[in-house]
Amino acid sequence: MTTESTFPPPPDAPAPPDPADVDRTDPAADNDDRRLSPGTRALVDWIVVVAVALLVAFLVRTFVLAHFVVDGSSMYTTLQSGDRVFVNKLSYRLHDPNRGDVVVLHQSTAASERDLIKRVIGLPGEEVEMLTNCQVLIDGRALNEPYLDPNVVSPGNCGATFEPVLVPENHVFVMGDNRGGSQDSRQIGPISDDDLVGRAFVVFWPRQNWQWL
Image: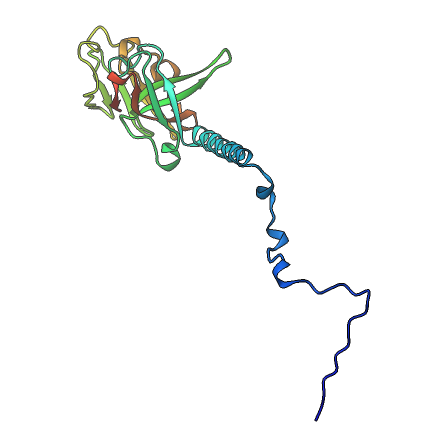
């Protein structure tokens, strides 16, 4: 038969902790948020939300979507001066330009830089010609252009006519819908794909001019 001996603790030994007094929380869980007041935490949350929103807006504006203000009458009556349009900057990273697209292009010369808005008329490898009656020919065939206003584009009011022009690879031939009041590929030549900012796809302002393009 064995007996269990117990010995009293040394006089200077600390008393064992009372289980009721033990702090069962993990000190690592005491993070900064617990040391911030509710008002400060709300302010930090708003700063983070605004910063993320600005970053997303910057990325969208740079790589995806832009807006363009029409200046002048070269696309009249499809577009009015002062119209605001959204431009899809991804379009021509995903596919080639299509005939009839309304595009924003960047023109750079020794004297200035500017953005223009025009319509794609001719594609790479095609011959484009315009007759004195304002009819555009693509490889000798008449181009149907329902977007033109016959009260604006008519014989004697269609600007410069031209002999057949071959559109080079990776270029497009553009013209304004107001043929008599547009500076376009007739003067500046075919436009390189690299100079296409994107495809304008909707007029969003003013509200009464809203339309898909």
